[in-house]
Length: 583
Image (cartoon, rainbow, N blue to C red; front, side):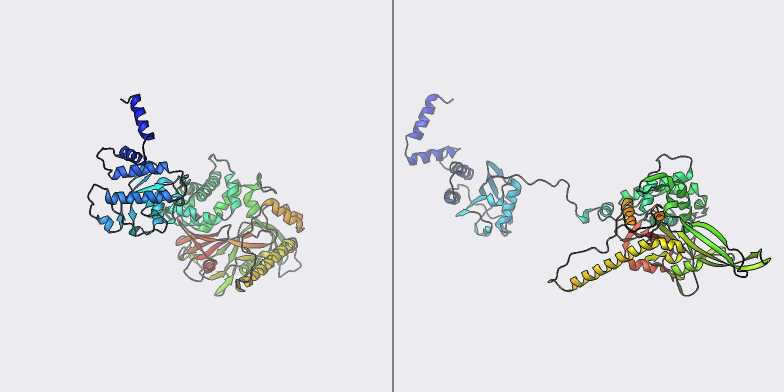
């Protein structure tokens, strides 16, 4: 127990003594075992005390002195024999100790062949002391970023003394960093925004291709998702609802979706798609699936009003997929006979493939609009020749064209395929199919689009010229090929500024210009409609083309789409879908 007299005596010795006595007392204070010598650990503690006493002194004068003291103390006063160089030290790797702020760090690997700045970086990770604020004592001063560690004569177990104030330790990122090679297929698909495919459930490629092509109609998805979620006894309502749910799954998934529910509802609604043979469910005609699906949706999917809001009193298919025609039939043999006029509608145009090695879609459509018919004439009292001319009086926002590639062969009881090449354009001007009064109404918007395309072409040409002129010329970057995004109210304002006919402005879902762009192609490979394989090809909002081969989805360029025109056993266009160009 320490008495008060002991404290007075001790303080007297500290106050009333010379310099050597004070040094002796300081030495004795750190000689923990009282053997009159300082071992390695005691030397380190001795130096730490000096650091504390001189912590407020500026400059490196005292640091250099203490560094020299430590070095010489280890060289001369160390009582332990020097251990042989370890294998790690011989290879340049030395496990040292570092003392800082009363803490000792020993889990350190020091490679003396590397720059000192790497060692400082290790200490920064351990202590939070920025390398610029680290003062590490070595023989002759403090360690610099470019200090050659191999020249310090370090041995295994060497103790470094470090001074410096720790800053805030770097925070971990809020979410762990993931590298592309570590992502799963699903995560990679989502990151790269690859659209999801559909699993083939056994000869269901006809259905998968149809669903993926109609996916290019964003307004359809909006209409379907507005249908009440509850399923009922109404099979067609259930089919429309399940299709909307399937599109939601495709948008949310980064992996292939299994359309089991939709397939079951489709088969319950249309029994022909449940037909089986001894090998299971049979392949079906994609054009038949397309037609039946559109028919079911036409009864249940609501339409839109002029502001772009869902309107249950209107029908989506009538607005966006249905066109109107007028047909005039005259008797060639009796010109005086009164002409017969018929009003009709269509949800797709049939392109009967013409003669020759290859044909053009638009030419085939124009030819189909002029028919020669043999029928009885009441005026002549006999069979006469009639000419029927059909013209379009309303163009829908989405125009579907079906290439009539299959013909029934009674002898073989199969639908034989016509492999002939039919060229279809990426941009379609449907003016030649329209009735004169409709043409006049389409004129303002058509001229507007033509002007826009000319301006875009000129800007693109100028951009290329500026790029080719070298780095000395600068130009403002322009994405002249970017797709145009618009909404209902914007379109109404544009149409009003162009003086578009009021009847067209009020007709939601119609095409006011007669100009279309290709957005989807459904193809077939094989020789029969109920065999072979179907694939969907669709363009997204960014103008990128994607190939949907069931659950395998890949991006393709426009050249690949051009190859779908036919002429061989490669994938051949069976149905093409066009969308009205945005104003």
